[in-house]
Length: 96
Image 1 (spheres, helix red, strand yellow):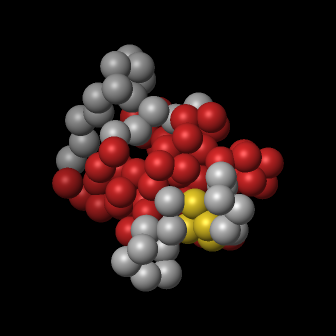
Image 2: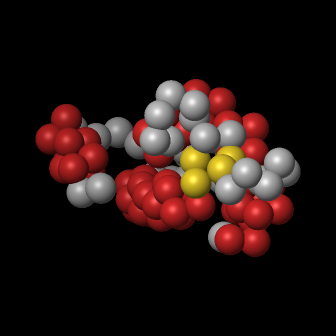
């Protein structure tokens, strides 16, 4: 992931912004909305700049992978949609 991060850190600041994060996430193989990218940037940036350092990028991708794996386990028909009870949703969220 370091190579991907460095490749898309076009200004060599050691931080990636939302545009660069989008490129990284796509290269890893995820297709997510701009709203998800924005939420990730807000969650993993140290301030409101929405810029993420490498260590936090890794944490974000590890979490995305874990959440995706959990989603895929529930999406048995591979439709991109799951139905779950509220309690199951909370359990899933609090695992991460």
